[in-house]
Image (cartoon, rainbow, N blue to C red; front, side, top):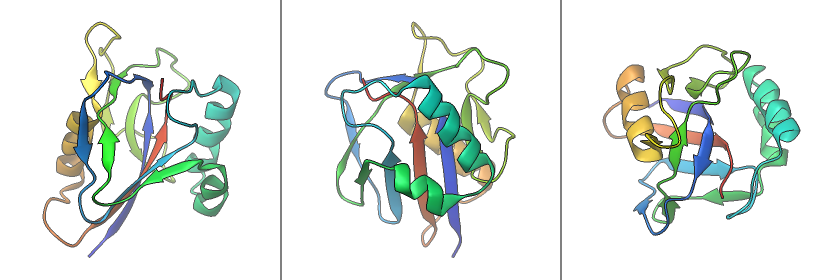
Length: 141
C-alpha cells in the first residue's frame, strides 16, 4: 500500500453543482475557501513548497480538507499558460508533470475527476489500498 502526495497546479473554476464523493483513501486539500480566488503570489509559494517536498509546511497553509465520503466539486481546470510552472498533476517533491493540462483552456477545460483518473493511470496506482493526498493549488471560484 503506497501513499501518493499529488499537487494539482492549474487555473480552476467551479462548474456549479457538479460533484463527486471522495473515495476511501483520498484527502483533497485546498489553500483557499470555497468560492475564493487563490492569490497568485500565495499559489507560487505553495508551488515552491510542494516542489521541495515540504509537506508539513504545505499542510500549515491548507484551509479546508475534503475526506472520504464527502462531496468534492468537480472543478474545471485549464493550463496556467506560464512556462515557469507545471499545469496539471505532479508528485509532491517533483517539478515534472504526471499529466499535463497543456492545450486545455477555460473554454475547453479538463475536469478534476478526469485529471485524477489520468494521474492514477500514469502512476500505475489503480486498485485498493493506496492513499492519495491531493493538494489543490488552484482557485475555487
